[in-house]
Amino acid sequence: MGLPIMQASTLAVFLEPPVEAGGYGFSPLQLAFFTLTAWIGIICAQLWGCSFNDKIPLWVTRRRGRPWHTEYRLANTIPPCIILPIGLGIYGAGLEFHLHFMMLARASFMIWLSALLLLPICYNYIIEYFLHNPVEASMALNSYRVSLGLLSIFVVTHRKSAVGVGWMWGMGALFVLPVDVP
Image 1 (cartoon, rainbow, N blue to C red):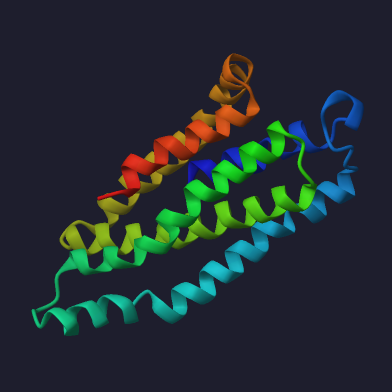
Image 2 (image 1 turned 90 degrees about the horizontal axis):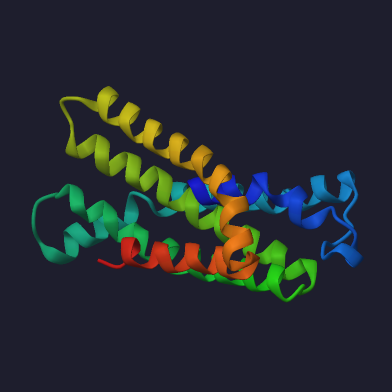
């Protein structure tokens, strides 16, 4: 969840400067409208989750013919694990090569959609795994998620100046791949 926080908190830095300065010249109102991509991603993730977060693991259980295992929930992570690195790569390339803002909007949608598809799956998996300590497990996951999300903001400016904006997001996509691939 740290990547969407990082993306949302840096929107003004990349989109509001004038075109001559390398930005997109967005007004505050245009920037606010751009954040609708996040809301659309959130809504789509909620609709997908309500429809499939229980159906897919139950289908895997029936297909394998075994009793329920907590790990069957992880079958839902396949689509977002493909979408997230692609969205990060498109976002970085869009900023680096100053592509049309709709490419950035599409990438922003993909980042938010995939991150918010993964979040409830991870919570359900961890809560089911630590069934006797659900509050402690949830607090640990929240602490990890929020602290890394907030810390990433402090790293962004140094990373951007060291490798450029395209590679900053591209490295995020590359760092996500080993975590996502089983």
